[in-house]
Image (tube, rainbow, N blue to C red; front, side, top):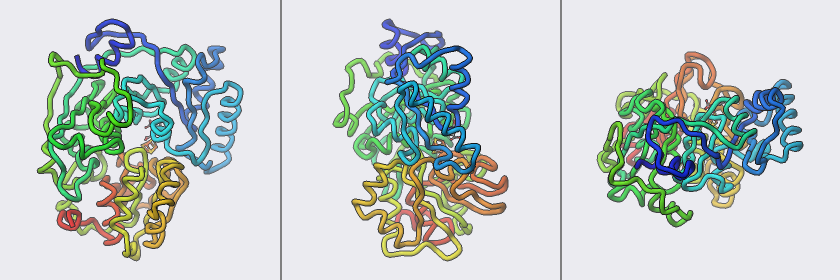
Length: 412
Ligand SMILES: CC(C)[C@H](C(=O)O)[C@@H](O)C(=O)O
Ligand code: SF4
């Protein structure tokens, strides 16, 4: 069995096969500020309330703090609903939904989590089956405590070895999406195995980055086989193991020892290149943050580059911690001090300008280096703003140099 099969079989109480439709209890249902109004509408149409409010979370992260009166009104309605129903509520500033659910211990190995956000695959970083759904499906999951799923086929991706200096999980994830293609894993589970040193090199944070980017290959779920740090942090159930008999739709091997830093160039996440193709291109705006790369490990990587240096004149840099805990930690460790002294500015924990809705959108013709997971046309503001996706290290170097760095500078 694959890991996706193992989790869904455990839920159903018998072995399930890819292609089967199953109705399963969900361990948790999550929704966000910008989707909750529709979720409430659907629940009201059904005359339903959350069946298990303690298994529901509402996180205010996407346009938080509210950018205008309409958003403020919608958030007010969601707050009142959360109070009325007793679901878990995370206010403006607590952080990006996925990071919050991981920090709160909701995401754990073997759990099934549905969220009204496509990057719910992130929970796979800790060995959960996390998947994104629309508002109607989430409303039904909240009302009934269950959902239906087609048991997905799986693509097996094996990362082998330890990455070279300057190469991170983001580079590995971009390489994976580039090789799979944007629709290479549509409705499949991407099952990620770390071997030959990769299981130690990539801790929880890095695994979340990998599972998060699996979405950009179209994946229903991205599940990293628990090993390394995950075994220290969680109790991993015995049944959560891919069997020798597991059948995969496709297998991909990535040698981390040979991997160079990667960039996803506009306007597709699978448009993955080496730095050499764009090195020297001027950069207007650098954004470090998001559910992909806004954790303390990512802020440390940026601070390491910025220590004792300045963001280049003509370039601006915004750092948005993925959560309030990340912010707190960055403060305690002096990471914030380093970033601020270098001339970066800090935003409220949450999604920040990832979706181009507030907190620093890009103007026409501007070039952005972002640590996020999407670079579609208009994603961060103007339709012709160019967004390059990269690791926190590459992004921070772009900020101090005012241009896209080359491979040697990143290896530095
Ligand atoms: C707003 C939300 C529904 C959306 C998603 O589903 O992913 C957003 O988080 C994104 O990254 O584009
Ligand atoms: S940080 Fe970006 S990718 Fe992640 S949930 Fe928020 S908007 Fe979506």
